[in-house]
Length: 240
Image 1 (cartoon, rainbow, N blue to C red):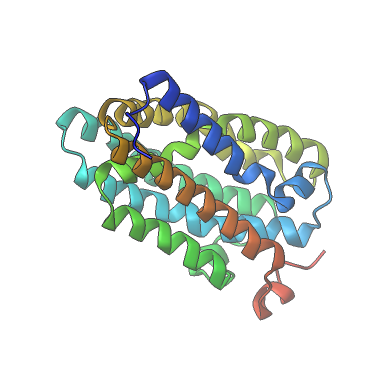
Image 2 (cartoon, rainbow, N blue to C red):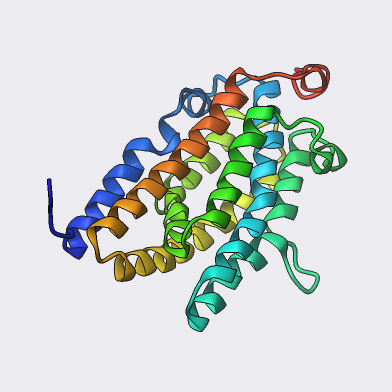
């Protein structure tokens, strides 16, 4: 059935509805985390495997940056890479996540070596990077719109980790505190690009599909983390 493109406000609501419906905060693993039911081994498995996602974000963002047609948007997008990689002696999100791992009893060398990464997590993250490499710049930007829902989850996560997982050194939570400011800035920019340029039915459908794909990536990572173990993780991360 043919239709006209959705007006800006309706398209925005459809993006928010789609993202909030499929966002990974609904995953059983996160639900167990939020209720304090995860073992130390499960928390460590999540931190270690999530690091593979964290360290690939600046690679993904460099790909998106190279596709953006507008100079001003490239300048804004560059900040995402700096936020994660750091610059001029300033730590970035990758360093902060390594400190989270150390606060939870995981050696940085182990996280950097990828020795604990589950195949399902690697497959999902690599698929996300390849999606951004192979898709249009608008679809790649749209896939980042899960950040619209990140601040609420991150704020809740800080409270949950402090309440239920006090064995994690609180100094390791800086990553989440930093993202409370960074994620809204990033999502505002990405949302502006999407709402401005997705002006046809096909482009709007492509954007919604890209957002759904990203939600599937995050969900698939948690599926792997919840159900997956490896010989090394069984002998290290899963110790209680």
